[in-house]
Image (cartoon, rainbow over all chains, first blue to last red; front, side):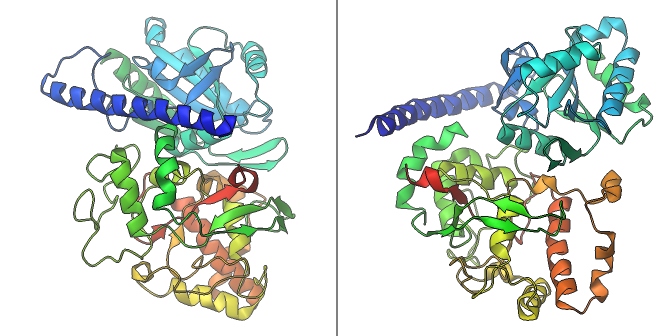
Length: 209
Length: 253
């Protein structure tokens, strides 16, 4: 048996166990469903939660996180790429406008996520530089980079379309999404420079929930 | 994705993974997204779409994809709609018919569990432009008429696999039974702000009035791109199935 095969088998055995554990956990949670007020840590994720996506992401600070690590925050999310010259600066401006209108005291419970659709170019360092250039250095700004596959999957959840049209350019949907503390999509605004009143209302409502 | 690797090892038992064929790489100009030739690397493609029987085995091994257990994030209410219960498809459905009413997430995970993946739009279109004899038959009138007459025929998803022609690469049923999921279906930018997308061709909307082979070809392909552009990943549609592909290097492991 080659080393590679051996590794596969070991990996398989390990994952199989992990898989069984996950199911057991789900079963346990179902038993708890009758209790309405369990702490958010133990509560089963809603079916529509993006935290059901198992992917790992790297932040602008080089940290690796699971989406679920963000559970408990209201998320405002957009997909961009840093070398973009057309729509992205306006999308970034839209995000900043939204952020400005969220009351200071609410900002502790909100994360503004910029997810790169160009993970090859957008290294953590590049995302970091971008955050500095755009004055998005506070803790509530989070830049994420994943694998091309996970990024594609993530976009499907947001109903965002994108396509690489040249080595440095993408066409993409301009959508800003708001997720509640359990990761369920509650609001989307589509287009550039649109009226963001409803988006801000959605954020405030979710924070106060 | 990782969750199913254990199953992958057993998958030889039920998958038709033996029946893949190699598609040689090349270049082609797809209908959408670019006006220039794009390269496609060689890969292996399933000869047939995934069937009801194969998908049944998959849900047996992977409870989270059963009808009653699938999370709403990953499949809408039409998921496996005509199945009697979690483990059996409907009485009027044939084991050898292509599985449909499956979401993109389910299709993607099915392929991953076999060490495969969904084809990209470009890969799918590249193989699908072949007829029996030529790798690119898109300018053939008969090729286009076959596709368009299929589009007009209802309920072809009830047919069994292998019912249509074997194409140049040895692949069956790319046209004639069901539409198929692609990994980057959400790379199609039709509608909304993308209408101004300079890479699209506005004249396509006049395709219905077309008569020449090139126009027929554009119309047939346009239908597919428009369909993809209208899809969301959790949608489960009765005429939409899938098949898997695999990178050449990987299969030689």
